[in-house]
Amino acid sequence: MSPKIEKTALEEMFAHIRAKTKWPIDSAMLWGYFFTDTNRAKLNKAADELRKRGYAVVGIREPTVDDDDQQTLVLHVERLETHNPESLYLRNEDLYKLADDFHLASYDGMDVGPPPL
Image 1 (cartoon, rainbow, N blue to C red):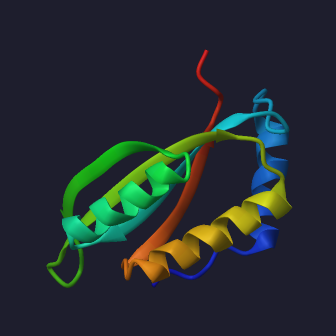
Image 2: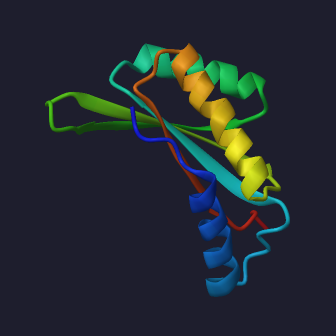
C-alpha cells in the first residue's frame, strides 16, 4: 500500500495552488480520486459503493504493468466538492478505509481542477 498523504502535504498543495493558479480553491472544485488493484471485479464493487456515496465514476483505466508484471487497473471517480486541507485529509482517510474494506491494492490519491463551466 502507498504511504498515506499527510496533512502537511495537503497544506503545501493548497498554498501552491493559491500561489500558482487563479483557481477558486476555496470554492467547489472538481476532485478526482483514484484506486488501484489487479482485480477488475473488486474495483467494480468499490465503484458501485462510491456511486452510492455520490461520486461520479469516470472509469477504470486499462492495465499498466508494474514491477512485478502485475496488470494494475486504476479506478477514477470524481465529485464537485469544497475542501480545505483538514477536510481533504478527512476525505482521504475515508477513502483509505474504503480501499481497505474492499481489499484493494491502494487508494492512490487525488487530483483537482476547476469546476466544469
